[in-house]
Length: 74
Image (cartoon, rainbow, N blue to C red; front, side):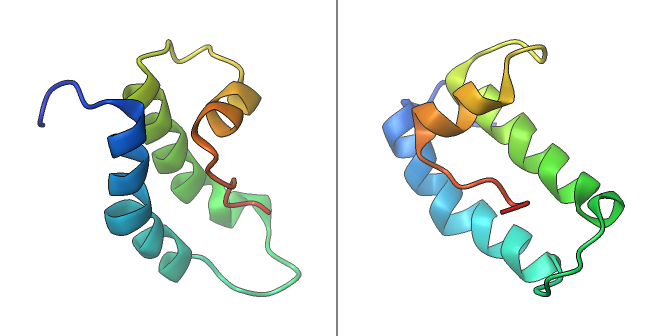
């Protein structure tokens, strides 16, 4: 809980502190089931929504195009 963070700095914080944990927690294989990734993608989406200050009904593609973060499912 740090208050408002500019998206540029928040993206750097995400890549340094959050993304390594999410990547380590997922299975690195070709046959990943979507149900196994659902918790990790939920965390990623919530962080990016908080960073950009958008509603939970925001289109997901906007989160990734505005921040330059790659979705976990890819």
